[in-house]
Amino acid sequence: MITFESVTYTYPNGITALREINLQINDGEMVAIVGGNGAGKTTLIRHINGLLKPSIGRVLVDGLDTRSASVAQLSRKVGIVFQNPDHQLFSENVEDEIKFGLKNFGFPEDIINKRVNWSLKFFDLEEYRKLSPLMLSGGEKKRLCLAAVLAWDPKILILDEPTVGQDFIQKERLSQIIKMLLTQGKTVIIVSHDIEFIWPLQPRMIIMSAGRIIADSPSELIFNNISLIKEAHLIKPQLVELYERLRVKPNKPFPNVYEARVWLMNKIRGR
Amino acid sequence: MYWVASGFLFQRVDSIIQRLDPRVRLSLSLMLFILALISDSAIKITITMLTIISLALISNIAKRMARTTLFSATFAILIFLINLLLDYGLITSLVLALRFIAIITSTSFFFLTTSPDELECVMKWFRLPQDIIFAFVTAVRFVPVLMMDALQIMDAQRSRGLELDKGRFYKRIKNLIPILVPLVISAVIRSSELAEAMEVRAYGATKKPTSLYVLKMSNKDKFVMIMSIILFIPTIYLYLFAC
Ligand SMILES: Nc1ncnc2c1ncn2[C@@H]1O[C@H](COP(=O)(O)OP(=O)(O)O)[C@@H](O)[C@H]1O
Ligand SMILES: [Mg+2]
Image (cartoon, rainbow over all chains, first blue to last red; front, side, top):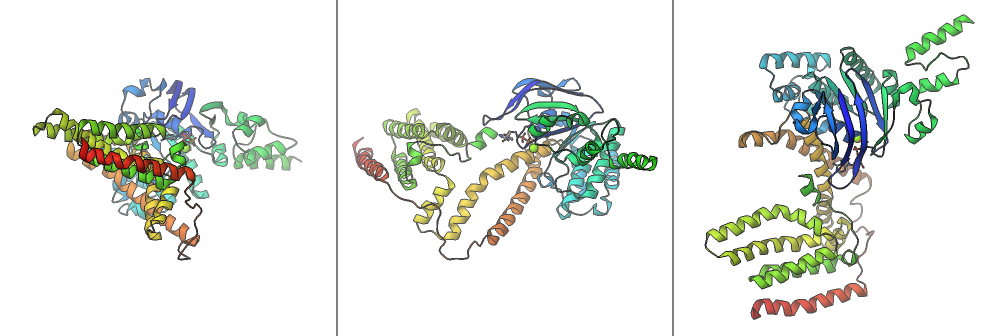
């Protein structure tokens, strides 16, 4: 469980990026954090593994105050995948890149090998095992970064803008991976503008603006609130648009295309 | 870390000094530098330091100057200690240490008050080759970008369990690899992107490109320039021969 208790954070240059944040994220939750550029999303997630410590207030991860724990200690539980793969890939080959975290956390050799094999297979990177990470394409690099974090099996996974520069198939795959992690009871937090990507995951949506949380509710409720959508610079997902234009409609918007299809087909056949 | 690093980022602040022609600021900086070099007694170094500090205060850069000198402060302390050990006496050691700081701050006065655009103009005025000017100014502009990259890389690797400030000397050096490799690689990527973007925008198409900013001395600039020289000459004389 992650708890923010009236957290305010001011960067050393005087910019206050978080203002009085109160937030609780339970185990197994799927959370999407959205908001315009500079809203404070990245600053918020940097607090969860202790990279930043609150100027005022406190952050607890499973009851542990982030101020009294090291980043390494917290990262064992909280895996963050940052936006830019070029900011983290450095190893000679793909295999070593995945080993890096495992070694830092002190896993024994045989488990390291097992985990590396699992990640490579799971993320479809096996053929690149001995290749330099720099030779991979943009999408593959991103997958490798994710593989390198999931290898140590953190209980909370945080993804900062995971869909930027990804093609449709990769997004679909990422979506599948997230759903699988959720069935394993992991907590997944996504920072993203990509509303079409987020919508089918039906997350709890947290909207940030100027360092504050201005909304926090299930995604289907968010899109009922027109003024809020405007303030957050969001647009409605296409499935919500479709839902709103139907004269006869189900009791809530379609979570994904497949359900929309089933419902529409039934209606058409019913006529 | 961030606090020191941000001292090196150029911030546009406005004051009488920043509104002067950059060449006037360069000459002020040079005069202070010369004074610092020849300040070899307690009185002289006090006067030099006071002048530098008051100029820094007027131009609103005192805070940033303090940050950037933090690095050289360690050297200054070293100079102080070595001289003390060599039996030069407390005052002399202190003067030598302060002189080192004065040399650093007098040069940083120019760089802290001068934006990359102005720097470019000044270099053009000295008729340096266009390519050298461009390379230099780009390097200056890239410093903050690299600094932000470095911070983000450190965040990313620490999130993967890297502990930067732990272990013996050898381990610490080894810990720099995961930081330096991505830093160099992203700098190379950035620079090749920049090169392409420049070529697309016809960099080098003419031998003598026109400038967006052209330097011009106003009467105020000339006044400050002349006054400072009038003050400087007798001061030099006094420094060298009188006390
Ligand atoms: N390292 C930093 N130093 C100083 N200010 C920063 C730093 N990182 C972000 N900021 C500032 O904090 C605010 C929030 O930034 P950020 O959390 O990155 O927003 P988001 O991820 O929502 O785009 C912005 O105004 C940004 O300029
Ligand atoms: Mg961000």
